[in-house]
Image (tube, rainbow, N blue to C red):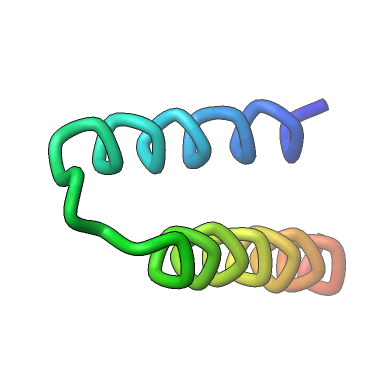
Length: 51
């Protein structure tokens, strides 16, 4: 559940940025989103290993 909340908050930030910057291309938005997904996955597994 914590991961889902993290993803929703990061995706919400993505939406805010895209609304503020209409010039951002779809490619840049997807790169940003998937970078955040990968960061969250890596953080999750780091926590699982140390826990």
